[in-house]
Image 1 (cartoon, one colour):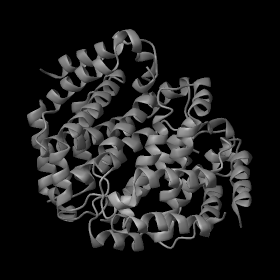
Image 2 (cartoon, helix red, strand yellow; image 1 turned 90 degrees about the horizontal axis):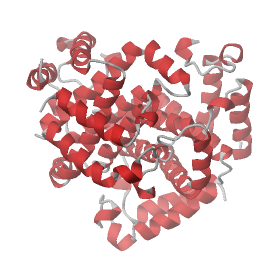
Image 3 (cartoon, chains in turn green, yellow, purple, orange; image 1 turned 90 degrees about the vertical axis):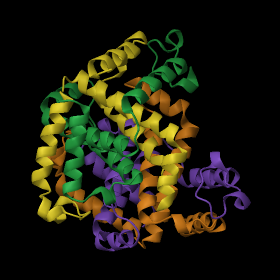
Image 4 (cartoon, one colour; image 1 turned 30 degrees about the vertical axis):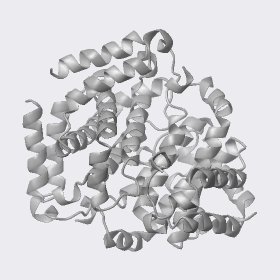
Length: 114
Length: 114
Length: 114
Length: 114
């Protein structure tokens, strides 16, 4: 399968339910944040080796959450006619300037601290 | 470009900076949630027609936030060896059962309320 | 009741379960964000008058989420020995400078746009 | 100072700016989630002893974020006429049933796993 085919399925799912009326950019962004928070909840209070253990034990739940995030992300980009691939390439270039290799290497500091 | 090529760029960006050490699943999930929240912040306090106006006016900022979300999403799925496309198809099928067309049509109710 | 009494109960609840070991500032902040996201989820896809209707219909659920947020907030401030009341008063003063009445009146613009 | 006095200041701040029109429960919940995410961002990628170091180094930023969360929380409870203290006491009682001491002691498991 490919992106156009995935988008076709995502649009069909929404339109069969007449849900486009709810899918304005604000609610879509909220939905994305809510799903990302559900993903995060899986790892709450876990530390060190428990994180990998949780990733294994909860694999199916994680797959579902990643899929939920992906569906909202792809649909929102589609609705706004944003070329996600081009946006990613452009953002990676921007980040490469923000975090020059020589300064950022091995550091968890945010760019305001570099 | 295609997904393998995008992933190659995402991995290069990370590895040139030696950042894989920070990119455990828990922090990646947190990063995803934080980026989704930044996207959401763009629409905070906006209502009705202001939402579309904001989507137009802040298009470049929105592209950047969608790209940030996409990069973390793709990298996290890659790290966990999750086939995101397969996960999306499986989740859409699950959602189709959870939200049957005849019950969900035109309704913003969550499935617990249907 | 008062804040010291509330804090005593919150600490007892945690310490009876030996949970202080998990309650580092990073996980507490994540927990706060997750609870706030659950609150938000109650209003997802709702618009206009549905928002008030939802606030009425889901009152008990909202009370629970607000309480969850409050508990993490109070405990985190307690753990970090931050005087929340003083922090609020100081932040309101800072915000008053950031959003001068004459510029901010009736506007939903963020301060970068004022 | 006390809660009624704090609320008086929070309401004044809002009303001088004529912002009540934007402060519906949905946007207030979104604002809370966004502020909690900003708090969380401070600790992103930090692990082990870096968490405490960050809590010290970024103390003033953390105070500001906790204050932002508190202001939205107090105002939202006030708007919905929810007695936050009573809600906290009730929720702690509910949590005590959900997480019985003998089962929850020393465990980071969520209640679905206990």
